[in-house]
Image (tube, rainbow, N blue to C red; front, side, top):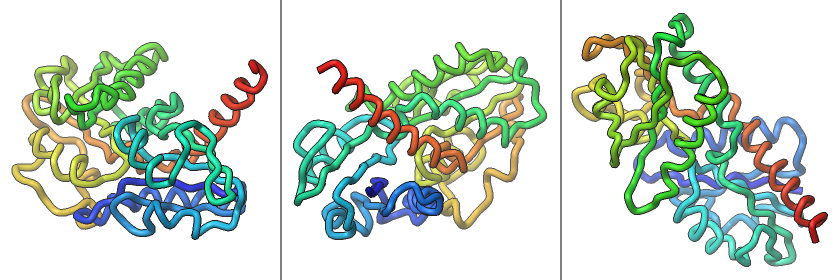
Length: 269
């Protein structure tokens, strides 16, 4: 049995695919699957090489994406020649297509882990937690995962004064973080898979941490410079949630969720 992690990849940023490879290495070392591989849309190995890379007859495919959308619903199924459902037969192999990692409820513990790492000594009751994503009017699904996490953290009783969602390209805009948040301490956690162009280079400018777009994450250490005193607040900015060391657990949770859903459907039928 094999596991394939599918990432977007990038021809512009060297850090885009790094977390996907790292999480695959961690899962491979646990010996749960006979084979663990990565494939990308914008990098090698490409999605069209997946079946040639693997000997296993059963393959779990987990999109290492934050939300459902064009890539998880159209690009990946097309490139992997999936039949349109959760289970497909391709080149004599049975392919199980799981949901993207970002929509699993267990992403909550990664957000909290990130917030605790960058602001370990601040009182939650004096702190606003902002989960920031890309946002786009072209895809209503792009904000659903973040809004779901806001609800889960609010309901979970973690003690934050407020939990907010904000976006790069639609309201509420992260550039207005000081207007959105009411607390003296503000913790911003980027809901992205990697410390790529957006979380490391674009958002810091929007927050006011940087004046202009800087080098890639692998070349600098912006996340180790917390806290920042900006606009009369104490601001803490974490690295992308998808780079967290707990991410392999979420990937495996999506595999378990897939199996559970299949068993439930079989029992119903």
